Length: 262
Image (cartoon, rainbow, N blue to C red):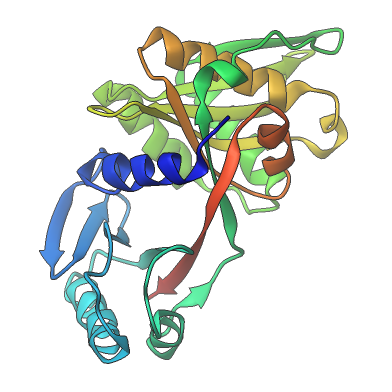
C-alpha cells in the first residue's frame, strides 16, 4: 500500500532544497526563504518550511522578500510558491496585501515511476518522440500555450532552448498526428534525489480523452527509470490529476502559486 505520509516527507526532504531550482541564475537566503532568480526577469520564492514563523513574522517576511526583487530592475515578475501542508499563518493575507494574486491551486502528486511506466495504446496515426531541435521546441511551446489558453510566449521556448544547451537533464516529449504536435510535456530528473518531475503536460482539446497524455506520461516514466529515478512528482491541474491517480500516484497536498508583476 502506498504510504502518502512517507511520500510527502520524502518530497519535503529531497525536493524543497536547491534541487528544486536547478536552472537558477542565483539564490539568496533571507531567513527561511530561498529567493531565486531565473533568466528572463523571473523571481521565485520557495522554502523547506517557514521555521515556525507566526503571523507577525510572516507579515514582515513578505515585503522583505519583495524588496529584494524590487531592487533588481531586471526582475519583472515574482512567483511565491506555497504548499497546503505548511504551517504558514497569515501568509495568504500578507501576499495579497503586498500585491500578489493567487493562481488556481494544483495537486501535488507523488508515486512510483514504475506505476506509470505501462504500455498504453495510442490512437491510430499518433506517435511519440523526444525532441531537441529548435523548430520542434518552438512548435511544442506554441502548442502548450494554445492548449492552456495563453498568448504565445517566445520567452518560454527560449528558456527551454537555453536549458537544452546546458544539458541539465531535462527531456522534452511530444505526441504527433499528421506531422502536428497534439500533446507535450517535460521530464525533469532531479539530481541527488530519487525523483523525476513530470511537468508542462498539455493536450489539444480535440485530442483529449483518447489516452495520449497517459501514453506520453508512460514514456517519460520509462525514461525516468532508465535514469535511475524511482519516484515521480507532478503539480497537476484538474485535467491531469485523475489520469495520474488512475496510474497509482497519490495526492499528498496542494500547491498554490502567487504572482506579482512590476
